[in-house]
Image 1: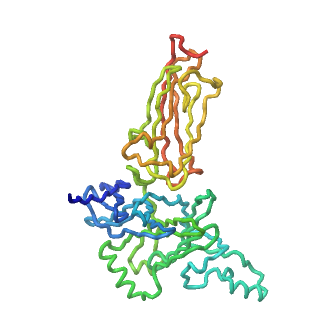
Image 2: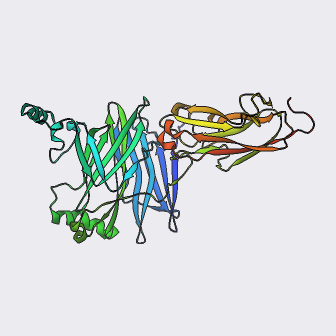
Image 3: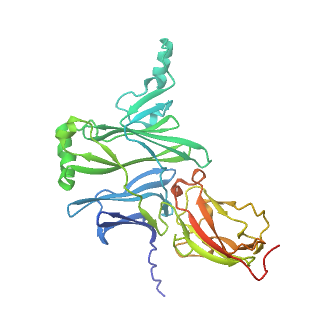
Length: 427
């Protein structure tokens, strides 16, 4: 018998769709035997990305920003499929979202208290008194200025607070300056520690060389405006931190560029819509819908598995949910149906639920084992108060949850508890 080779399995790990003007942009992330790959299309027609595949490695994984710029019929389109982490050993990939940044578009100061000199590529000696040799010489010379902090001013600044695997908070800061040809230098700082920097226009290019080899090919394709994407992944003390500068728009007109600094941050006009397991993370009913769910129970009814939902993508860290309901009208959780056992004045109760990354299962093909399932029923309140409509609400606790799930829409279930005129109510 001749063994028939098996066809390699390629998993559609995530997909994004975004409306730009009259065009529909789609990004599909694929995981297969060769690792991560990405496909883009405009109005259903495949396109070859001009810029894509940006990746950086930390802790044995490669972190990709699934981003592309495409020129189509004279229009420039930008695709953003979020951050993805690829395991280089088994070829698997999973979504990994950056923190949510605060933007200071008018610039600002970053206070640096320590410099990891061996990780930097500095043209000049920045923060000189934090450099060991210069610091010691200054002390010996009797310098009485500030030796502990270096404060730098940048054209643009972004900040975000994130948690590491031990749930400790860390402040990430990105400071970046513009130059005559666009982005010039970028600093990455964690809790005051200057951990990395990038230069984007190396000094080895003379002005005419930069015009010939860099600007002219870009101008030929895009005209005088170019979009770029900048990001960096840094590993410090066994933790991975993603610095996401985002899109930068650069005007390639040299005459205008030489007259002033020349770069601008571009925020997405609206977040991409994620589906089929893609980030940003969302809460979805077992039917795949986010519509308000409506249920109806008689008072003192039997238990029903009325609330079933799941997380659309595997979180990188814990996701914490708060589920709230009116216990005088709805029984919720593992309890069977029947009478309300709470005070008639206590009309709100909260259950906190924690979902760890290892708890998550891929539910693109709905599987009861992958659902978060809770029993619901009508509570008998002992009052002849007619039918009552109350809600059961599921909310992400942002400050305790994976940043990829921050801002996710609540799930809402409206429950009508029907009064029992036949006397089958609790007393």
